[in-house]
Length: 148
Image (cartoon, rainbow, N blue to C red):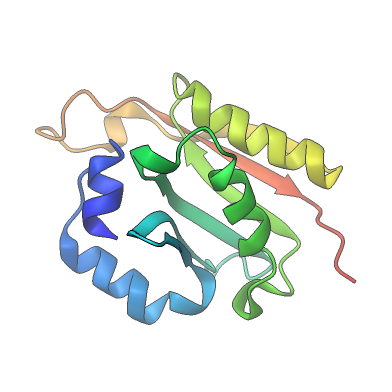
């Protein structure tokens, strides 16, 4: 998962963080494989302060699987895994210039027939010096998702 998400161009995080995702947050995350190995991953968790939501930390797709709607399909599947079966919101943070992610999440909201509220969450100055010129992160709140 670490290699896939790093190669996908996402923020470089510690391999240890992904071990935690794959162990402590396995019930709320998922991976996609093809005959050649891992092609997609969604790292996510249920925030303790927002138990009705699943927070999508990262979504990544291998180069060989891009352009086939895999990220969208993984988000739909994420809502069906047992650990997320009762969520009524899907949340994520996205930098304002990340058009592919914004299209992905806004498109998911349209497909689910629900709203997508967008609001500031982390200002650029929240990120430490030395972390590069990190842009602010806006929070997207998709829902309410109807559960049957």
